[in-house]
Length: 296
Length: 250
Figure 1 (cartoon, each protein chain N blue to C red):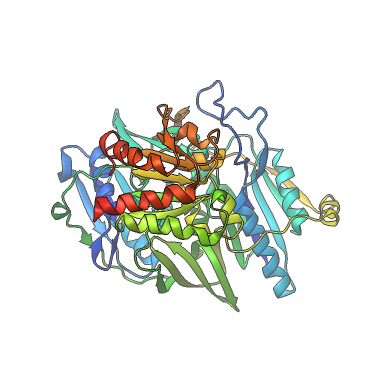
Figure 2: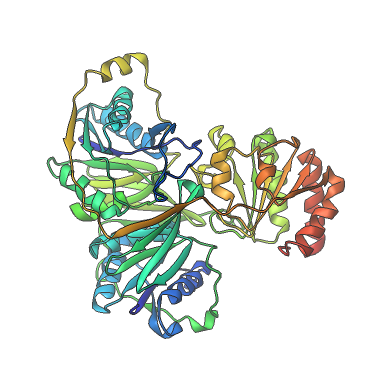
């Protein structure tokens, strides 16, 4: 495999966690470790300008592969770069290998109900990797991306970024997710899940099942499942979620799954590593209290 | 306002995936197919934009097998004016091939807006919309959750990690839309009857194989059997213990 271009993301001048995962994934494609991977960032407010700069760099540098993160930013950027290079993106990849000089990518399809293994024959190969899947094996100090200069931002320009309320993590990137379903009974009751998320000290996000999003209790950004986000956190706590197949598809790649449900026959217990049967309104506050003790 | 909406026929989200005998594809026997849920928001948005403008047309474009006529009829029943089926039994895994075929068809007319769902719930590619935009040289905004259009200028909101990005763009443009943009209408009986008489142009297409070669489709690895650690709040200390000592996640 020839050189690999890793496209990193930063916010407020700091590389985001997923960027180290991108470097890690890119290294798997390069020979001889880190020397074969070049890292770049683009901080222009225009996605078109960034796409042009990255595509030009990919061409002039003669890279065999270009690796992005499958984040909102990466999903927006990668296809534009790929099209300029005359190829498509092997999107949302969860495993990468090089077999006989050809990249073999594994990607969840049907929201993770099946895994597709695909030989990526495009030159260059353009790949986006799912956040939280590739365990970063690089030190922050080792990653010094070059900032690409952008000639013109392009026609699509960011006017403003409305930040989410402080301390709120996105479910797609959180290490811990606490999701609520219809068993929460009322939108106001999600407060008990938010309290638990807070107890984890800024590492946790609150997710939701499709039923409660469709009912308007929670925003679509929080929805986990086939028509929402597919997530792979370290710990997924499903609270009052029965476990519809489209929900299970979206969270089954979590490392550890805990289910809290009053119905001991709920399908969620079939995928959970650990289950607690009973009234969530008694169990969750107790759990919050215990987690606070651990982190206190 | 002339709007093209590109839709896809996909297995319903409740489908239990069974792998076909070739070991590379979905066994479609007994599978219920529907319009990709994200595309419903695109159809609805197109209808609202046309209704607001008072003129123009909403054309629905679908690449897929003959059975996708049914998917197009659903969009026509919602209120779209006409349908185009780019008919093929073989959709390659390489999205650039799909995008090239769609872009070639879209070139036949000038559109104010070309709408897509932000992703298809089968292949999770998230890219045919932006690929088509690049091929047509049009500006593109992906995952639009809120949209305002004034004349030839649009302002869209899209969700990014940790916030909402507000972007400006000129028309004509390609947009991929997210859930939450609107509430798609259900086709009324009158619409369903009318849809039967609306024009649906079927055009056979041949797509290249592209540069993605599927070598296997496999079920996800089974999760090892879990266990109930207890009942009620009294089980919480034991849950904490197993999460710390066994799972080592706390």
